[in-house]
Length: 182
Image 1 (cartoon, rainbow, N blue to C red):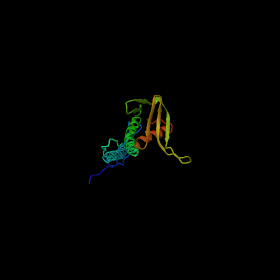
Image 2: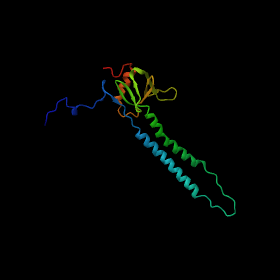
Image 3: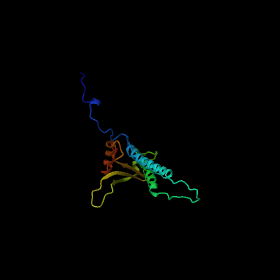
Image 4: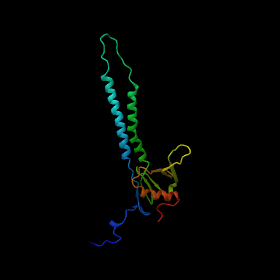
């Protein structure tokens, strides 16, 4: 059996890869939320199509007496379409939110997903985002906004897939310390 040293990287416990002099990628995934929204929206749209087909298939035949047998369109059928479209719009909303989340955070500043760069000398402060709750209950922190002179960078905790790498930066900023001061 070969001897292994304590410095062998394969034997070390998994730790955060972020360090004070490195670049941190903010990885975000909305896959589960988008999949559920599309599935629920698709189900409502299928119900709408089935109800619409059933409405027209079961329409009474036109009589030869010349009177038109026009039935009013049932409004509940439209509810399926409206609900389906509401759920199908959710992925668009999540995509728009994802654009506000930074791609990279490093010693130079924050780089957004659209290529915009906010340098640290333009940093103005951090705004903690709390979940809206009923009066009298404790609000839970759901993320932060990094406020810069030319814009803001949103960091929501839930969709981030590498929280250990990102949260040490937000903790440093909450304490008033520059995150990459070496």
